[in-house]
Amino acid sequence: MTELILTPNINRADDFYAELLAAHEGLSKDDSDALNARLILILANHIGDRDVLSQAVNAAGLPD
Image 1 (spheres, rainbow, N blue to C red):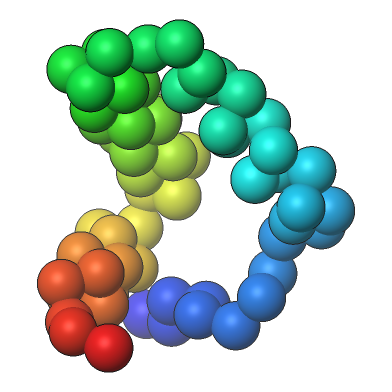
Image 2: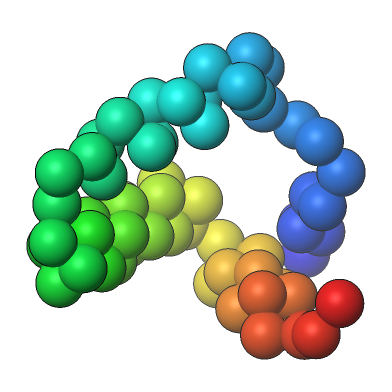
């Protein structure tokens, strides 16, 4: 089983964050939510490992 990586692991993370914000610019709340849902499903498909995806769902649902 592969473990979910929770430490910083994105090259040029600030550039990605800016790109993500730009993708949402001008969208309604509903359209922004739909974009997020599509992005989640695309990335989940890319990851493809159900154990890792379950770990991510559990990690995202935990309070800080």
